[in-house]
Amino acid sequence: MARRVTVTSAAPASAASAGGVTDTASARSWAPALVYAGYLAAAVVVTWRLWANPGTATVAGNRRDNAQFAWFMRYEAIAMLHGHLPSLVTTAMNAPRGISMMWNTTLLLPGALLSPVTALAGPQASLTVLLTLGFAGSAASLCYVLRRYGASLPASAVGGAVYGFSPALLHAAQGHYQLQFAVLPPLIIDAGLRLCLRTARPLQGGLWLGLLVAAQVFIGEEILCDTALAGLLIAVVLALSRPRRVAAALRSAVPGLAVGACVVAVLAGLALERQFFGPLVETGSPFAPDSYRNYLEGFVTPSSFQLLHTSASAAAAAQYVGLPPEYLAYLGWPLIVALPVLAVWCWRQLPARACAVTAVVLLLLSVGAQPMGRFTSTTPLTSVALPWHWLERVPLVSAGLPNRLSIVADGAIAALLAYGIDRALTRLRHSRLGTGWAAAVVAVAVTAVILPLVPAPLPAQPADPLPPGWTATLTALRLRPWARVLVVPVPTDEITAALRWEAESGQQISLVGGYYEGPYSPSQRYIDGFTYPPAYDGRASIDGGAVPLLTSYLDDYWAGQYSIAPKMTSAQAAATLSWWRPTAVIADAATRPRLTAYLLRLLGRPTMRHGSILAWRL
Image: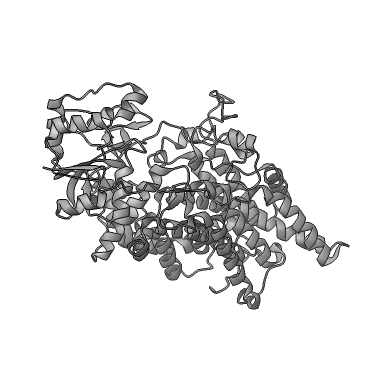
């Protein structure tokens, strides 16, 4: 247990203002450990369907992102097991151009740390471990920070649970692992505030802040930016509340912040330099402006991921245009009603005031440039531009999505709730109710407020299995490590099927194409597909993404589903293959006569056939 910080009058809270603060002896007791163990147990309950089959079960509803993250975990594990760090730019996907690992959500740090689990139990098992730790760790980190700033252990425990198991993190668990693992944001804000409030020594505090920021760079940079915004808002509230102490706080913070910046430069400087000044630098956003934002209806409509929901509310939530993994707004009516009451009631308490202002600003930003009401509406509620309209034009900020601010907003809301619990307990204990009745009344009220947030166990589905003959084919081809292989996509999540197969089998091949984020033009990015020769832009927009014309158009499924004729001539196909220069072409095409016939005309007789897999060694 870390040393208890004594909060001065310039700090967010004082022991007297918090009410019911635990002393040093209590902080070192078994009670905090019991709370953290409870978080872990709750995380296992939420993820138990995944733990039933940890090597193959994924959270239902997002096959593409799950397959992509499984591929990243396997790639990083292979690098670590060979004694080196994963490459920052690799051609293991989207050969010959490659991808930037820093511009993609690659989980470089978790992937490296979990490489033994990946090697022993597979990448999906590592992702299940990461999800479980994400829930429990996020709750524990906020609980720990709240206790630093004067909240009692019971109130901190509730606040940590509200944050760690919030609807935002619950929905992010559908394949957005870099968002769901929100363990470090509370610790980063705490480290920055301790430098400003002079409760941490500049050298030690700066080292700790730099370590946390560098670690978050290699987990998810978008959450880091959102965390920095939340920390800035809290600092502004503190500065406005104590203006005479701003100069002294800045003088004390500068040395520590400088140390932190040096630590980040040492640990993450090379990676950031390769990201912003190396190959495959990206600009702009792959999404239309304001395409992922919180709808007002989303704040009060529970999805099927909440334990308390109705079939009507789940159906309504399913209409959200951003799809379930981005359904991050939900708070529920009881909490929405309680928040302004708590903000007014606890306004004189500085930490509660800072949390209230931060939560309001972040929630306002999360609705985007213009507020949208119901999911079925296509017209904004007002033509007046909201603050996000200007923020989304700022470089780097424009690459983020406003609805994801809900994650850090939920942390501020949870902290405000914790301070409100302590204030209520203090007031009621001094009334005629007495300590026992006061605790009972507060417990009933808190239960009513947070009950709509209780999560249901995550739904699970099996990952796409390896097609018969996949492993035998790659073994028989005897390819050199990281040889280029063109895997013809198949109808089910066609772009990511090959990623899942490679991740599960552990084969060391470089895939031509894939599912990734990369530069397409000076002002655009794209998220999936293949890189085609400069002379031929073989791309088309189908199902929201780039579909490789060489393969998918000729599949019976695509032809029947979309009635699209092939647009790539044989000469263009041959030129594209010559530019890709694959060592082998592998197709799950034995049961697809049109695709098989086309590949036979293009490539000739296959080198081998195992199960449903055809393979040509070129």
